[in-house]
Image (tube, rainbow over all chains, first blue to last red; front, side, top):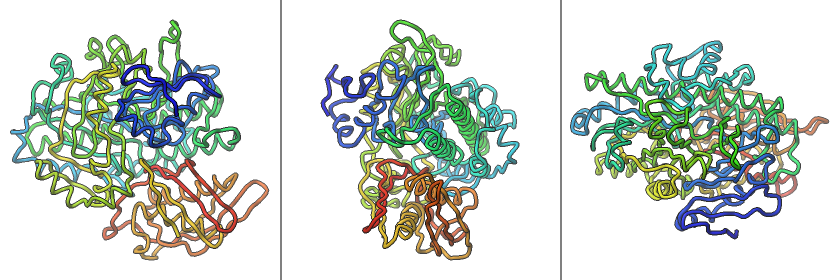
Length: 473
Length: 138
C-alpha cells in the first residue's frame, strides 16, 4: 500500500475510495516493515470508512493486525452520526495495567525475592479454566459491575487512594449489568480476582533508568533499583462474552452485508443496541478494575507478610488499553464530545485535563507500557500534543512479531526460565508451553515502540523498569 | 483433521472432514489443542450441546465459543465429540452434538488460553472437500 511520508516517524494513508478520513501511522521505518507484513494498514483503511469518524484514524507504534480494527488502533466518532463497534474495543475489555510503587530497593528484597514470588503465586489465582478464591453470588457480581474498583475497596481490598489513581476512578458510571447475558455472569462468577493466562502477568520490577526525574518524582518513582509491582490483566471470560454477545446481536439486527470485515460490525452510538453495548462494555470495564484492585491488594498483603511492611506501596496508576468512552476533544477548532475507541492503545492525557487525578494534573497522566515477559517495561507521561495528534493516545505494549505456534516450536519454557534466572529474574508459571509462547523473541522491540512515542510527542519517557520476578498465568 | 497456519498475533487454523459435521468437530479439536492435549482427556463427563446461528459462519463461531464457555463455567475439558448433526431450518442453522471429556483436575496441563473465536479470515466451505478456516484471539 502506498503511504505518504509526513516525517521520519509519521505516515499517512491518503483518503481514497470509501475512506471518510485519512489514516495516520506512527512508526519508524523498522516498525513499519513489520506493519506492512500483515493486514494492519488494510484494517486502518477499513476503520477510516466507518460512519461519523472524526479527523483521522490513528495507528500506534506497536500496531499489528487485529480483527476489525488493528491492535493499536484509535478512532473517534461523532455522537449523532457515528458508531460504536465491539471490534473497536476488542474481546478483552479493559485489559489494562496497574503499577504499584514500593519504598524497597532491590537490595532489600534480594534474599526474600523467591519467597515473595511464591507467596504471590499462592495468593493470586492464575491459569486457564481455573476459578478464583472469591466466589460471588450473581447479585454481588452485579454490584461489582456497577461499582468497579469502588466495590473492591468497600470490601476491604485496598485503599480509597487507589481509586483516584485509576482511570475513570476505577468505575465507569454508565455501566448497567442488566444488559449482560446470563452467560457473561456465569463466566464472571468464578473468575473475579484471577490473573488469567496468555500474555497476562504480574511482575516485581526494579527501576533501571529515570529519564525525567521531576515527573518521576511526582509519580512516586524516586531512585534507581526501587522496587515496583506491575499487574497486567483484564475482564476475563465476562468481558470476552460481552464482546461475542454484542457482535452476534448486532449481526442479527443489522446483517453483515457491505462490511469489509465481519468483525467491524457496529451500531449507531445513539441506537438502542449501541447504548446497550456501551453500558455492558462499561460493566465489563468495571469488572476488570475490581479484578486488578483485588490482585493489587493481595500483593500488598504478601509484602506485608514477607517483608514486614507494605508501607509506601501506593498505586502509581491503572490504565485501560481496550476501551470505548466519551471524551471531549478539539476537532476543527471546536471542542466536541466524541466516542473514542482505543483498541490496544493507552490514553495519554497531558497536563490540565480534569479526567486525570489532581496529583498528576500539573504534569500529565502516567502511561504504563508493559514489555514482553522478562524484558523492560516503561512509564511515560501523557502530553497535550497527543491530544492533537492521536486523540490523547499512545502505544500499549510490545506487539508480537512471531506467532505463538512458531514460538512454541522454537523455544522451550524450561530453557527460558534458566536464561531468565541467569539474568537474575525469577519465574513462576502455570505451564511451560505457555512460557515458550511468550518468549521475548516473539515480540517487537518495546524500546523502539516507546522511542517513537517519545519522539512523536504521544507520550514522553519518564522511567524504565526491568523485572526481577515474573509470575505468568 | 486440522492444521495451523502462520499468524502473527493470534492462532489460525484450517480443519477438514468428509462431511461438514466432521469438519466442525475437527475445528473444535483444533481450538481445544491450543489449550490442552484433547487426545489425553478421559471421557468422564458428557455434555449435550445445541447451537444456532443465522448462517454457517455464525454457527461455527457460536459452536466453538461453547468450548470456552464450558471451560470457564464448568472447568470442562473437551476430549471428543461423540455425536454431531447439523441442519438448516427456516431461521438459520442448528447443530446438536454430544461433547465428552473431563473436569479440569490436576494432572492435566493447560498450556494456553483462547479468549474468543473471531470472524477474521473465516472461511466455511460447505462442499467437497469440506474445509473451515478460523482465527482465534489468544
